[in-house]
Image (cartoon, rainbow, N blue to C red; front, top):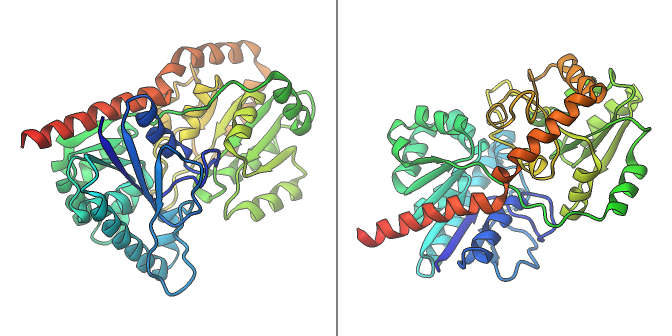
Length: 396
C-alpha cells in the first residue's frame, strides 16, 4: 500500500458531481481496488462526501473574486485576460506550497494536467511523480510564451508522463523530444456505477424525447471547443431526431437562442449529476461528440464522455479530432466526420437514425470494446506505473 498525493486543477465537489468525476474515479479505484491511501489537493471548492479519500481545497491569495475554482476551465480562463494569467501563477504557487507540505506523507504524487498541477508538484520537489496530460494543458504549453521551456522543466522533474491519447504523446515529443522515454499512453476510462432501473430510463426518455425517433445525446461543457453550435446547425436537417444537450457553460445562452430561433427539436437538460448522467446514457441511442479544432490549433485529447459512452454500450458519432480519431473505429464503434461540418454531421446522424443494420453493428462493436474503457483497467495501468517509479526511487 502507498500514500498517493493527487495534485489536480479540477475536481468534483461531491462524488455525484459531473465535473471531472473521472479524476475522483481514478483516485477511488486506486484506494478501493489497490489498497492505497489518497490525499487530493485541488483549487477552492466545497468538497464533501469523499471518504476515505481526503480532499483539501488549496486557497490562494488574490485581491478579487477567485475565478480558478475546482470546476473552472483553467486553459480558457488564462486566455481570457492578463489578470487570469497572474491568478494562475498565484494558484500554482499555492498548490506548490501545499504539495510541499504533503511530501513527507506521500510515497508518490499523481498530477492531473501538466499546467498547473505537474508544474506545482515539480516546484514542490515531488519524487516518484507521475503526471497526466489530458490535452488542454499540452496546447497551453504549445501556445504560451516560454511554453517549451516550461514543458522541459516539468518533463525533467517527473518520472513518468501519462498521455491519454497517442496524439498527445506525439505532440509532447515534438514539444520536448527528450521526454519521449518517460511517456506512456493510457486511455482514461470511465466508472458509470450500477445499471439504472428500467422504469427510470423509460420515464426519462418519455419526459425529454420529442417524438418516437432516435435520441442523440451530447454530454459536456458548453464552450466553443465542444462544437455544440455545429450540432444545432446539423439538427436543422434532422426533423425526426431528438437531440439532448446535457451541460452548462459560457455558451449556454447563445446556444439556447440559436435553438429557439431555428425552432429545433432540442432538449437542454442543463448540468446533470452523475446518476442522472447514467440514466441519460441508458435512455439515448447514441452519443454525439462534435468537438472542433479552434483557430489557434487547440483541440481536445480524448473526451471522457467517449469512454462513458462505450462503457454504457452506446455508439459515438464524433469528429475526427485528437484522440477521438484513435478510439472511435469508423463503422465499428461509431461514425467519424470532419469537424466544423454541419452537413456531414447531419448526414452521419441521419444515417444512424435510418439504418437499423448499422445501429445493430455499432452496438455490437461497442459491446466488444467496452471492457477496454473501464476505469479499473486505467487504474491497473496507473498502479503499475506508480509502483515502478516508487521502486525506482528506492533503488536510487
